[in-house]
Length: 450
Image 1 (spheres, rainbow, N blue to C red):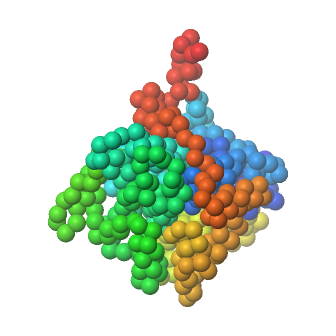
Image 2 (image 1 turned 180 degrees about the vertical axis):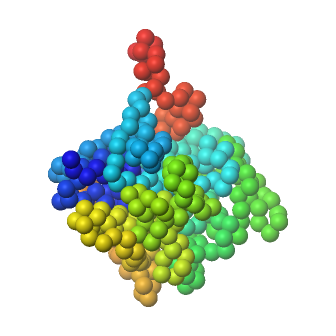
Image 3 (image 1 turned 90 degrees about the vertical axis):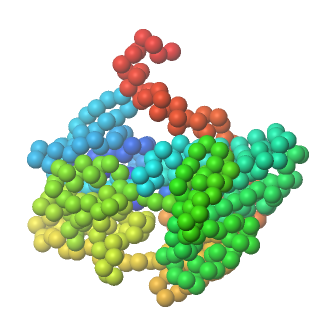
């Protein structure tokens, strides 16, 4: 029997680990909660009508169609029996188990509301296609509803957009909403002027893109100001409801009327990380990430690897590696190499060495910031680098071609190719929470279906 490798998660870490094992004598079972691989860095473009969800989320089975040693299964891993080497999975309306010889856990990260999970109903995050489509419905819907009202205060509430978190995702999101309001939608409404939309970017830290360094951070903030984005740093969110957001700065609180809020402020490891840590005796950090060995395996369990956003591992500077795509990609390849070495009877345990290829963030069309080693770029040159890098990592030739076409429409023209949104997209989150798992209900109550 071939060596059984179970991979949890079809993000960058899991996918690149699988591809690195394509010629190995292993049988791989990939378990993922969706049927697609998500290119998360471009979700904000789905939310603002530039790209379709299909362009950032190709089907897993299509991506891996030529790799014959992979069995793709839909489901969410609920538990790991480290003694029996079995994972328990909840699929849509069905539970099942999968045995393993080696387990790779790369389940990514979830949105963190810092203990205020009730904020999620009114301020969606940016971690899934569902999130992006809900935000698209809310953003474009806000202008449509504002156009129906005559009361100035009501119109202002609908045309105020607050983005929480001034990291790359929040900065890109705020910049695109500003472009949408001040450029793309101008002249399309009879009763409102979209240019009067108010876009706020708030963060508890003291700078925009604070990990990029002071120089690039300052340039990014200046560009946001030119776009009309109000940047509020050192400002903490203390309350969110359907029609407003409450912030605190310098000990003073302010309630800002706003119907559309976007949460891009924090990330945490998914609940599976805590369950895996409890099963193996591993420790976790404040964000729930697992403290792994230098080779990304779990302490005392060399057959289990935790990758990417799931792991806490110090880099060359002594600080935990960031939750970015390159960490996931490189750690996925490293875990695959460890498996191949083990199967070949070679020495294992080599430490994972992360090569930092730099950080990128767009501010608006033709404007971005890039930090690549000692090279710091801003403006159009950084934007060109951003385009090249994101095209390179988009999975599939078709996705690259259609992305370029849609960028051409959005950046050179004034259109947005993907403005369609539905009421279901806007409110499905609350409906599903109230209704429960529709697949499980269907299997338990077959006589009530249809």
